[in-house]
Image 1 (cartoon, rainbow, N blue to C red):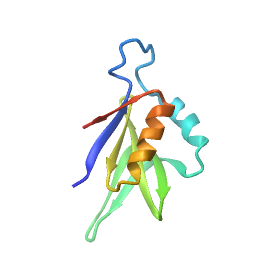
Image 2: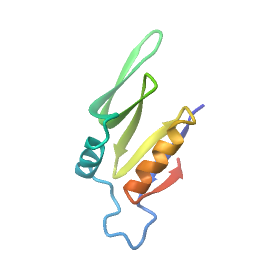
Image 3: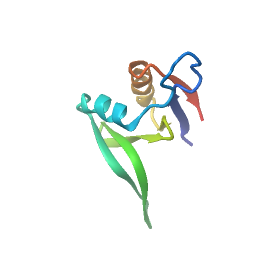
Length: 102
């Protein structure tokens, strides 16, 4: 089972911009060659396909895509591989945000 983490500024009392905005994410991830933006994330299973609407920044890593989803001012990512952890920490540091489980 994957752990889900949230990149957030909501715990920073002295930060005037607690929400991470879509424009901020688009600008940040545009500078990252291994990320693309998508408004739909599609999950294909053995018997069905599910599409989820939203704001996704897809990280291509080792032939797979890992979604970082912006939702209500926070970025969410599921840790399905240890390789995601340093990338998540890098993003949180660059966005001046914290990482919390959940």
